[in-house]
Image (cartoon, rainbow, N blue to C red; front, side, top):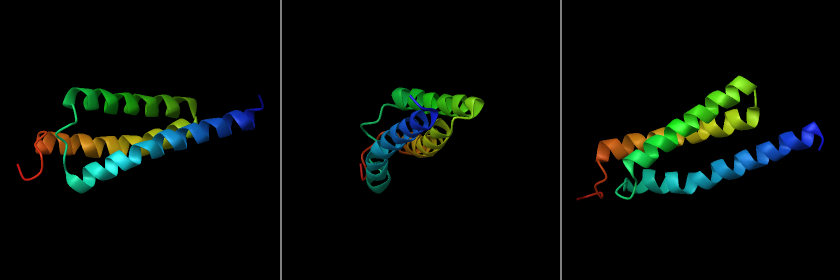
Length: 92
């Protein structure tokens, strides 16, 4: 497979996985309802995304860098809300 095609496959995969995360992040920002979010799972997920970003930076792989930078910022924001609101439903 040609290198440019491999790069495009990486960008497409990065866009799809990152964009699939946006609706859930938006709903969480809008409702502030983090009661269904596991602190342990989300902490592990956020650390994993951060490590993927470091890996992408080490390789100079732009699909990994861009996708994981966006996902990390969204995941960190949700993780901060999860810690701040403690998993309570809004208004509870």
